[in-house]
Structures are given as structure tokens and as C-alpha cells.
Image 1 (spheres, rainbow, N blue to C red):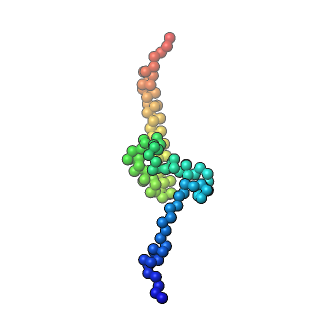
Image 2: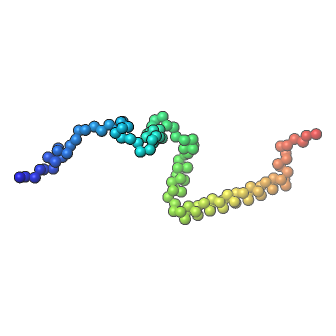
Image 3: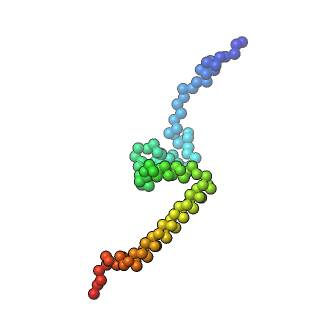
Length: 115
């Protein structure tokens, strides 16, 4: 007896049955409400608008986020330290300028003295 060919096996295993997953009796949800949540928060839904923080982002911000994402944990810590040092230096510079403005008496020019 000859063994069946691959085409014969494929045709014998072919099924035309349609599985309808809409029946809750046949396909119950493991966690109730998950299907609706996924459908409402799916990125493919047309009615879903992106969050406000995502609308305000531009190409430079995306590039910076990708740069931060590509850093190793040690590299990210170094970058954070650099940013902290920069913020500290800017604070010192601002304090110097405020002191200078106070000595030059330019901060009180806009105020009107009340009698």
C-alpha cells in the first residue's frame, strides 16, 4: 500500500468550519470587561485621539526620547547628573543677575509708590 502524498494529507486535514467567537457561552472571557477595554484603548480605533502630552511633542522631542532610550543605565545616570549640574549653574547665574538688578535698582522702576 502506498503512503499518502503531502497534497492528500493537506486536503484531508482542511477544515471549512467557521469559529464564531461572539458567543459568550462558547468563548467566555477570563477577566470580564477586558475585551471592551482593549477595544476602546486600541491604537487602531479611529475615534481615539492621542493624549495631550503626545500632541505637543515635536520631532526634536522624539529624537531626544530615542536618544535617552538608547542609553545604558549608567549612561542615563550620567546624563541626569549633567542636567542637574546645568540646572544648578543656571540657578547660580540667575541669582547673580537678580543681585545685580537689585544693586542697579532696576527691579523697583516698574512699581508706583502709594501715598
